Image (cartoon, rainbow, N blue to C red):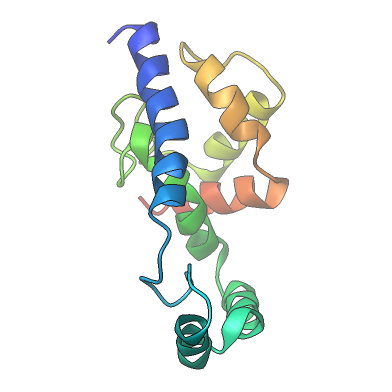
Length: 143
């Protein structure tokens, strides 16, 4: 695949998915609501409301291992690197150590060229905190 095709596919995914999600936001899940009045009251009764959801999420995060937190953060990596880190548009990540993944993500975050597709990774890594990078690396090591 050419770099232009990679960029086009990435752009379609990066912008298309959020647009679709915004257009399809309805009361379909425990943490999502798009309604008012009686519908909102039903959602609040089922979930406890925004505060209860936030408290539950904070407790879950506090009780999670770095690899578990990294699994959630890795969701943004799946499109290019595969659910099991097997590669695809991006290189294979499975089998790499925490040190290797951390080093590469920090170098991408700093704007360094690491490989042929560095330009795609610069903006992705720039959005990650150091904790996100550590957690993703911990998860990738489990693949």
